[in-house]
Length: 258
Ligand code: KIV
Image (cartoon, rainbow, N blue to C red; front, side, top):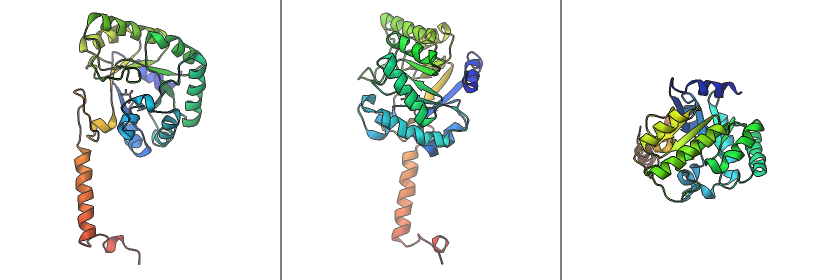
């Protein structure tokens, strides 16, 4: 087993697993210094391309961004999301996962779903491909952004999904946007680490979309904590540049070749 995955597994019930997304080299370089997992999420569809759902994200989109991220990731485990409809059968999942790994040199792939895709996860794992699962809110399947697990039946189904993902051999799973009590129950019930996004402090780790936590996004769900307001910082920098050019303060003698 990959030594980075072994390290992540050992953290369950001991110390928190840190995960952030990255879609390009410069951000990946900064994120990688501190993360256990750097995720090239298909959230790049909404964050970078304004897609209404992640369903429009293609394999080429994921591979191109992941190649850039690979240049910045040196120490963390690099995981790439398999886009919608690229893992509908054992054979297509294996073919596409192999393509992603070969072209991007990532360490693992992430698949969304529970019981329905447990066999596919198992197939990939049996073929030596490390898989990160994803349960709860599944952006590739649900068109609405909605909290999950509020009613008993839905909570039961999500718990069963999580158990199926764990039994299928995934090394860890993301739990997205579920009520705290359900995240706590799942984390206690499965042997693999859980990584929450909008799923409470009871998960074994946390993940956020980097643009959201830096204040670059345009939709901030309740579960996002903004650690900066990069939009404002960029605005100030660009305004200062415009002023400098107009008043001929830039370029100065420091910026000129003689
Ligand atoms: O696509 C993504 O960025 C994700 C995270 C939100 C976990 O799946």
